[in-house]
Length: 228
Image 1: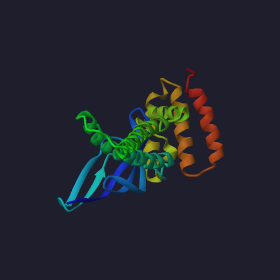
Image 2: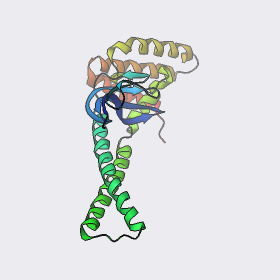
Image 3: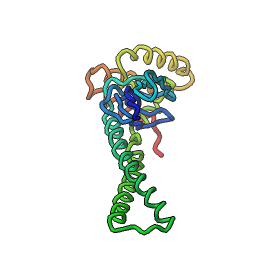
């Protein structure tokens, strides 16, 4: 009997900075991502709640502490689908390779069909492993995104880009940043630039003169980030 498992789960973990990645919540079927629902800055591990009839049909829902993004993260969505495809290749290749490998170890002769099938399965397994691993290399945060999020975290205490979060989170981000800047401003002039950076990113999130505030972001990062 095949158990039908439907619901939602998080996939496409990318752009991790200081342990905070971007993930996307998908509607899923049998652990395969179907369509994206929302992207988040993930702040912790997910927990899963499962309801339904065991061994027949269940509904699974994952939740995690997170800050929702204002829009889907394209890289996260693409990586989720790619990892699903490569995972399928690895699974489909692993089973025949295991079966034929056992035959070879027991000394059983392989006919031409079995030999060809083994080569195809081995290729699928290699493609799944190599391709799946490569997605984690291409899913890294850019140097600019890393610098930006780390600078903002000095005030927000979270490595996030305020420009990307939902408007409902703008107020607490601004209040927390102003409070942190006021606390350290008397001792560290850097706090003024950090607060200006957060304010510029929030302005971008509101759609206010995006080009102007992007240029201001670059100017502030040049002052805040020391060349390596």
